[in-house]
Length: 219
View 1 (cartoon, rainbow, N blue to C red):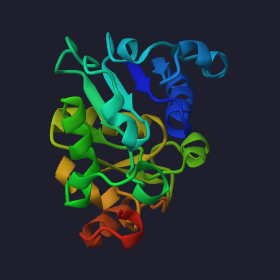
View 2 (cartoon, rainbow, N blue to C red):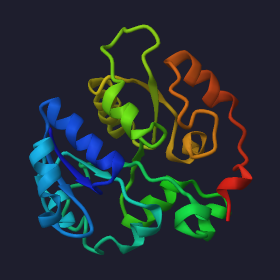
View 3 (cartoon, rainbow, N blue to C red):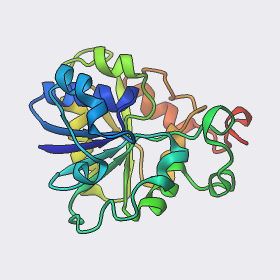
């Protein structure tokens, strides 16, 4: 699959490495330009490109940047990009540490609904609740006992199925977390965040997660 990654931080760089290992054709971009990605490109096998190029000619695009930077993405980022292209959002809201106050999120909008509104495309929420080193090192073959499970939320069932298959390829059990407005159950501060649960435990934890946002993750 041709995949574009916008963001070359811990999760973006890790996904580039793992996806290339799985045989995907990966292009990766950051805010500083492709010339700053030569080391990552040499290590991972991903192609360094601009953000606009990362979004074009792909079957799936991952947006994995600090949440506060989402509005700074190019206005024409997805202009002309077919609606069949799946967009994955891994972004998390850290108002006190990094992002500042985002009113819509503070008023109850899920992080991914906000991202979707900013970029003008539906998104699937995934890969946001696992530490990057665990994503890099802890994938296991399907059927392995206590295989780590990852939640996946999205409104389009076909898009969500594509992402869930990718999660499985990378060595994790995908668990359906409902629509994008249900993705609050995998946001920072929730019981599944960084917990490395197996599928049964993750399903139970998601079902029992309280709807209130922890105070430390509010502005």
